Image (cartoon, rainbow, N blue to C red; front, side, top):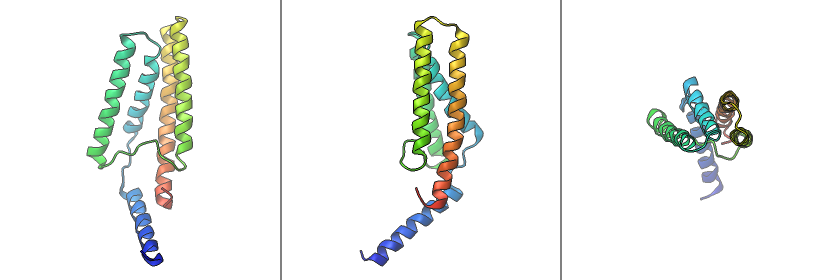
Length: 149
């Protein structure tokens, strides 16, 4: 492949990315809320012992599978949050905050703190995950439009 063909291939890829950005999945608010609910359930599961912990975690994982299948059926693609680029900072920050919330739930369980404390921690994780999902999508869309993905 000569340099002209290589540049044409790169230009074609950039054009396809911009087209995907323009016509690709535009997630409705409920989709971001569903993601945040999954994160909240995973965090909340750590505040309880078995069998409730296992049940909540299994339901959250089933919801993840449902979201992947729904995205593929609805949009033709599932975009993973684990990717390089400008979104990586949002993903890593979310992982750190969720791990912190899970640690707080474990602390609440071990020290027999109230159900209100456990729900409060999970609610905080929900809000953080919702904000992260919205921000992540905004950054991802901008990357696609700029051809940087």
